[in-house]
Image (cartoon, rainbow, N blue to C red; front, side):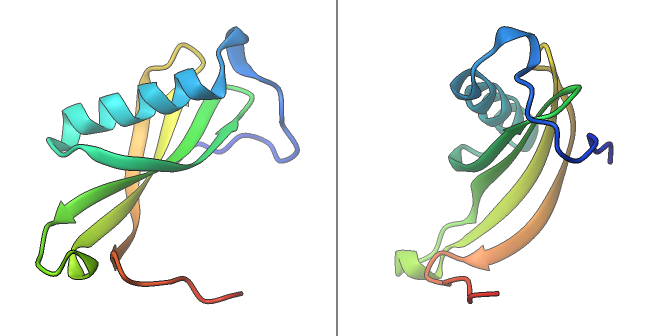
Length: 99
């Protein structure tokens, strides 16, 4: 997967982070056929944007046992989805441990 050089904080082509979040979530929904629950990270790169999007993958009862996936999404400066990959799969009730 393409990575921007470290230290880059330049905002691509005048688009806002909110715009990039909507673009990432909408295009990922179209590809996966599942509605994203949230965008947990967004950052500008030299070539566009990178985002982490949380998606409900398996709904269970009780809700705390539902399975979610975190998808890392790469967008061009114009908002086109260039790549995505699932980086994590977890139950809704799971809490990350401190590193």
